[in-house]
Amino acid sequence: MHLFQQHAPADADEAVAQIPVIDFGPYFAGAAGALAPLAQAVRDACERVGFFYIAGHGVPHALIDGAFAESRRFHALPLEAKLKLSLDQNNVGYLPMNASTQRHSTVHQATRPNENESFFVIVDRAADHPDVLAGKPLRGRNQWPQPPHELPGFRENVNAYFTAMNALGQRMLPAFAVALGMPADYFEPLFADDPHATLRMLHYPPTSGVDNAFGQGPHTDNSFLTILARMDVPGLGVQLPSGEWVAPPLIPGTFLVNLGNVMRRMSNDRFRSTPHGVIVDGRKDRYSLAYFHSPNPYRTIEVLPSCIDTGHPAKYAPALYADLILEFFRANYAHQKGHATAQMPNRYV
Image 1 (cartoon, rainbow, N blue to C red):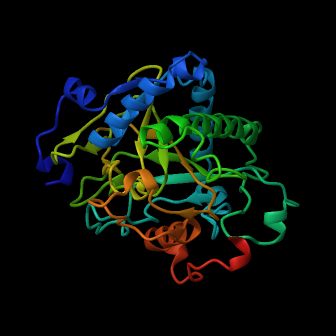
Image 2: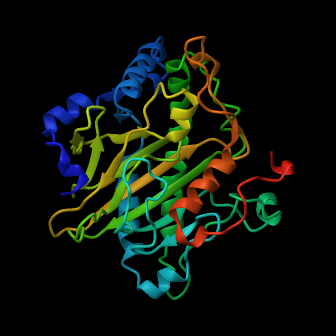
């Protein structure tokens, strides 16, 4: 029996009741007094379930459709062309089927690799970018399809979607800051000078159905927040605090947002980083676009002062975010095994 099946699944109506729809539109439009009630809605969702739908996000539907079209184009390339772009030590590029295992997860003990292939995109830095020239960890370059499989327009269209997601993630930060009892601009220094942002373009064939097989094993994200776009093939399962697994339905005009372990850590476990995973039943392939928005890797992650008091001391010691990222990489990706220690040189702090 799959982990998703160990609890009776909720129906679509119950899933929507558990995972609220939050309209950011009035705040993004500059409506007077919009931030306080928005932050209250965000606080409720983050404390209660760790997932919500974002409406009023302002990202054009055509841009989202275009990104899905580019993902299909890429994943339709011959395997040998994709393997030329294999993940580097910054985890940028192509991850083939069955090449990652959810070993870092405390949710589920994975015994089989994930049945998906992925293409990872970051900020599109030039070859002469100072961080690239310095070989600074986690500040690498994208890998793009090359002749004879260069996919005209692919780089431009994917970058356009990435840029829109990055801007959306930044615009959402004040709502989370106020939701945690901090000033609206509190997160600005953490996300300044190029935050750690990654777009993962996922392709899932139907899950094999063998014992303990998943398109993506149950896990929590290692990000601050994740913004997910999905197509009409289901497969995502989200575990509610009750232990019940739900399948969040598609709601037109929304993205699905969830919190990651960085947010949970900074909130002293007040906000939830909720387990989720993927099993694709049926015969159709599934595509999704997962955008991960997180602080600059060379900032210290520590529990917020608003989340500490005499009855609730800090559960986590301060840590350089780069160390947390590399720990996650080495646990989950085969090409990272034995690669460099996590500690970053002081000149990068």
